[in-house]
Length: 227
Length: 227
DNA sequence: TCAAAAGTGTTAAGTTTACACCCATGA
DNA sequence: TCATGGGTGTAAACTTAACACTTTTGA
Image 1: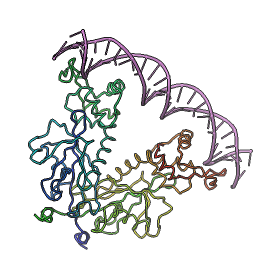
Image 2 (image 1 turned 90 degrees about the horizontal axis):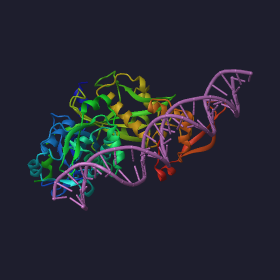
Image 3 (image 1 turned 30 degrees about the horizontal axis):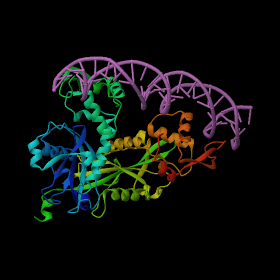
Image 4 (image 1 turned 120 degrees about the vertical axis):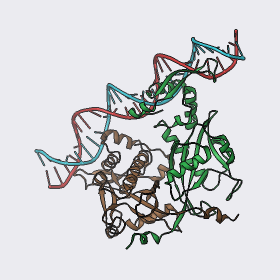
């Protein structure tokens, strides 16, 4: 039996990717959401998505879609999972694979974002989203929260140099709870790959705050993180 | 613009599910693997899989495939993720969604399993598997390990009544490390939903061991678990 | 009578939490 | 000079880890 026959009896499906794009700004986690000016569901809010093409893996489709919206390349992304309910997209059956990305909100291409009719939205004040996008967001958020506590992915949301107050505010936003400053700094001090620089940030306070950086080489050696 | 056009430009894909079926026997985690007597890759080892059909969600496809092999219904299953590399299946492009299942190895339909040419295999002595199935197994195993420590899914691998030695051996197999008996039993004693019964198992020892059971109602109330 | 698995508490080490004041600076 | 955010240590509470002997019973 030639190989083709084995597959040919089976149905084929549209496969899409949807991107949960996290940013961090003014003490809050934000998501990049589209106000759709196209069908289906014109005028409603949604995640940025796109159909997987013949010549790309699903991971690459997600990267392409992220780049289409933000102009950004080589960004941290992780798959959340496949969403395959039959009626999830009322237009046609589409199986969608959700990915989340962590980007530094200052890095993206603002015009590109605007041209897609996209807006940064506080994750705690999300509008109603189409289809099962809310479920994707919740799952991505939990996955990210989980991961951010044991791998240094959070640093993707910050500028290269950051103050400890910024770092703490970020983790408070991720965990959704406030932390003790001294205990937090104690943990940072025990984290070898968070390096103090000799630069000072004067924008956030009169006194100025020490800037730190994450050293990926050191992280790769130790692979230990808990915050 | 009619809705159809929006979708029609895009390619469609075969979508499959693959099942990582965990069982527990003689102190080891086992996987149910198929020695394929069909193309492609006849004669090689693989996970049980199947194509998603038009009239079923991906979750239901996974349940169907599990039932085809084991005869079992309403089994704990969880999605691991989508595998979408272009060349993962050398025959045709297939996007596959992996699911893992935890079953009590005594419950399944042995004849059905035999008729599929499937065998229980010690997870620490797996043969080479086709495609990216090894990667699926590793991911499923990690996900399961993670989850088994914070939700009482492990009990799905045991008979309804079990001894504490069985439970400890199970967790040692899941975590891949041995545990202190007294500390383990202390944790069990603090777990409200693990109930002592008044039955004794005499098959495992001369003295006999107390049988316990998991009470799902109590778990649903407290939702606390850590072992 | 003895081999084999079941059962049982205590202490030390390590981790986590709670908590309050001084410092440097620009406005 | 004072309002603002930056920076610092210690003790108590809790959690985890280490450890060894007695019990029961069938062969």
